[in-house]
Length: 93
Image (cartoon, rainbow, N blue to C red; front, side, top):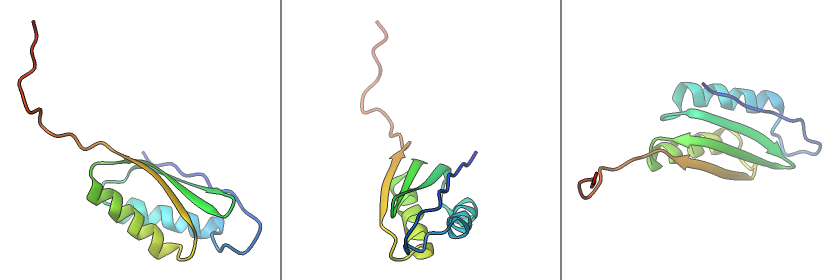
């Protein structure tokens, strides 16, 4: 499930509610592994939070953000859910 918050911010940063909603729709369509990406304006900076399955997916999300909102500062707090196989068997004793 995907969620987003938008806040109208004064000033000319160009990140209107409409543009953020459009970005969110594009992430839902194209975002590689979009797993609940949240978009929130904090002053003139866009805060992007959520979970991505890999670093490549996170990079794809941030690329789309930069394309949709050029010139808007972005703070990314996207965590990776990528899991790798354990390097040794688990000891259950």
